[in-house]
Length: 148
Image 1 (cartoon, rainbow, N blue to C red):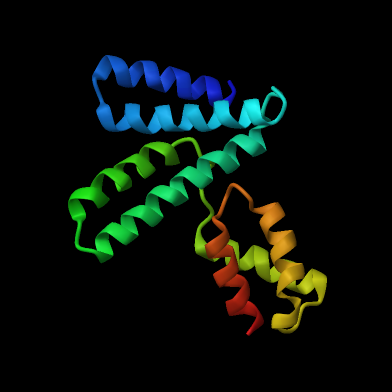
Image 2: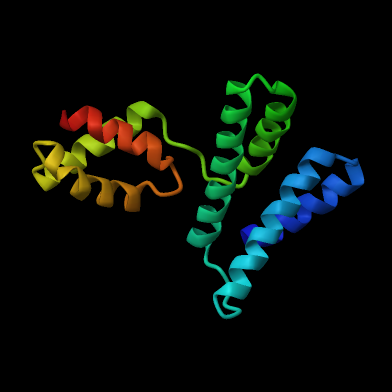
C-alpha cells in the first residue's frame, strides 16, 4: 500500500476517533502530497519522494518546537511535537547512531576520505544510502566526527 493510501486510512481512523492532533497532522501531509503531485505535472510520487516529504514535515515540526521551547512557549511546542510523532509513523525505522557510525566508517574507507576536504564525497554517498533511515543532520554530525 502506498504511503498516500496509508495516510488516507489513518485520516479516516483519526476522524472516527476524533483525534484532532492526528487529523491535523495527516491533513497537512495529504496537502503536501497533493501539492507535490500537482506541481510535478500530475505525476504520481514514488516512495522515495513521499518519504522526503514526510521527513521535511517532521523536521519543520521539530524546528518549530525547538524555537517555541527557546522562547518558553511550551503551550505551542507541545502540539508541534505531538504532530511530529504522528508523522514519524510513516518513516522507515531509523538507524541507531552506532549502526550509522559503522556504515559511514565503511564509506570513509571505500572513498579513501582522510580529511574534512572529503566530507562532500562521503556526505553524498551517505545521504543517498541512508536517505530515509537517518536525518541529514545526524549523518553530517557522524561524518564530521569520523573525518576530524
